Length: 281
Image (cartoon, rainbow, N blue to C red):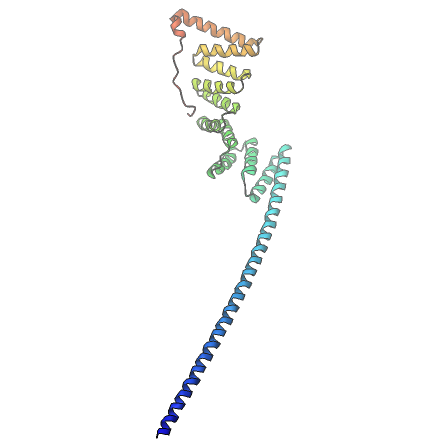
């Protein structure tokens, strides 16, 4: 009986040893298998990353080539459009500029040229639409407001024209022509004091421009500001001593001053201080 117990104990021990060896062997096998799988996964991922980099590089190179091709076509369309504009071939110029716009990422140069062609062909509606689209895209450009001012003036939308030119002088205070255009619009609406201010600022930018001084003198005269009107004519005569028009006009103003003196005395010549007005309408 004792021998039987010893046999069973020995059998159990052997079984335990075999089971332990089996478990350890399986565990080691499992560990080796997992390590092999992980290594394979890492290898696959590296391959995928390399392939992804290659695909990205290929796509980038392809896109770069396409962009270069598109830019080349854009430049060629723009160049041909400029040639058509120089020859006043307006229909061809429009076609080429619209083609350039379809290829452009930066639409400003082609849009400005196309809008200018529309203005030259009196297609003010399309030109205005193009300019408003640029403004909606927050593009700030003096040329846009200058040309909108031209469109509104030709369309007799004078208040809108004034707003456009006011914006131009806000963006560029050194452009005498825009001050003159704005002054002429104010004169048209009989706002002579504002017109005079615009012409005065234009004359300050171009002190030897007699035309600006004539405009200033006339506006002051219409505004019954005879002192400043006479001063403007005298400045013209310092630039052009033999200018008969300025001489005659200055004599006329002097007669006006004398008339006021005889009617109201010297006090009437003291021009009351004018209320400063904004150039905006």
